[in-house]
Amino acid sequence: MAKSALEYYADSMGNVVLKDSNGTPSIFVRHPKQNSKEFDDNLPDHVHPAFIVNNTTDPALLIGKYMSSELTSGGTQYSLPNMPPKVSMTYDNFLTKMKAFGGNVTGLTIADHGLLVLIAHKKGFVSHGNNNYCADYRAGTKYTIGESVAVDAKRIFRGWEYTCKKAHITAATLLPTDAPAYWEKGKQVGGTPVTSQFSSDNNYSGYNTLTGSGPIDWNFLDDPCMEADIQGNAFEQVYGVRLVNCEIQILADNNAADPDADLSASSSAWRAIKPHANDNGFDLVAPGTSGTVHYTWANSKITLDTVAPTFDNQNRGTNFKDIAVNTTNLPYVPYILQELGLAPLPGTTVDGYFYITFTAEERVARRGGVYSNTSSAGVACLAFSYARSSSYVTYGARPRSRQTA
Image (cartoon, rainbow, N blue to C red):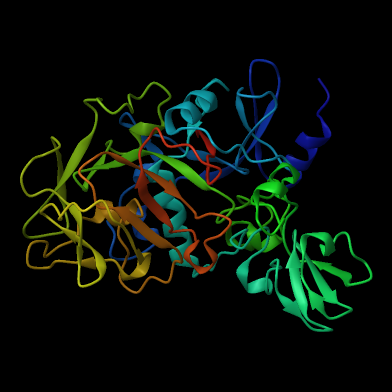
């Protein structure tokens, strides 16, 4: 069968095309197997856990080039360009719909996320994306209703830069797209907005942008061959990690990447992290074991500790690079936390805020940031803020798959 134009495009980018049982494609970025020490000398010289599934080491892994989208309402999720990213679906429903693709496709895991964080760490990569209503906050000032604007003032609206031609008070009746006597359209600096979301935004800008429609620097490593929309747009669900009592619980290696993995709330596969007293090693133990790693709040920072915090149901955040450690209880940070992007390496500059709701209830992870996070969005941005049943316009997903040969 002849290749489609989409497949030729993917081939030209060095990407991998997988097809579901109906022949519908998805595009993935291939990441070859790497050792953790390749990213930082503080890490062990062993294969990064993202490549190990059920004790089998894969030669590569595949991450969706694009955020999850659908071709039929409520149907299978795909990785395709120029699509509205699917949002407003729960953690479990996203996983079901991504696995419906078939084969080894499932949802992005914490080990995958950790790999991206380590790549960004090694490269010194600073990410950009839809973090300010269809543009990056560094691209300029966003358009807002009810503002006094002077001649030659520049505003970003629906991903484009506009210059004010006539001083006025901005209004819904004088949107830059509808009032050429007041605004001159300039260069495109953002992505193409999802039109159905215009009326939901008080400034009529829209929230999310079509997958892969932004500038090149919205791609991982500023490379058009790599993952698009790596930050901003909508938080992406992350599987294989959760907090219960603010205790960090994971599945071993990248076992969460097995489509048959049990990631339910009651799964017996969840393990807590018991640090070694004399080195940065660890043991995976039953949740609730005394002395396992938790997140707490101390000195106005998210802090790694071996005791539970005070539960006040407040959502708090810290820049990823500034996450602290209670060295009295945790003299050595288990290296697995750094491999998974759950704790920073010394001196890292990887961008993104870390959010936690300090509750005893289960909280699942979502990565990258959203359309309104501005400087808080980033590769390392991770939020343990909501339950698996939560569903908002700020929640999306990204598929991943294994390459086993």
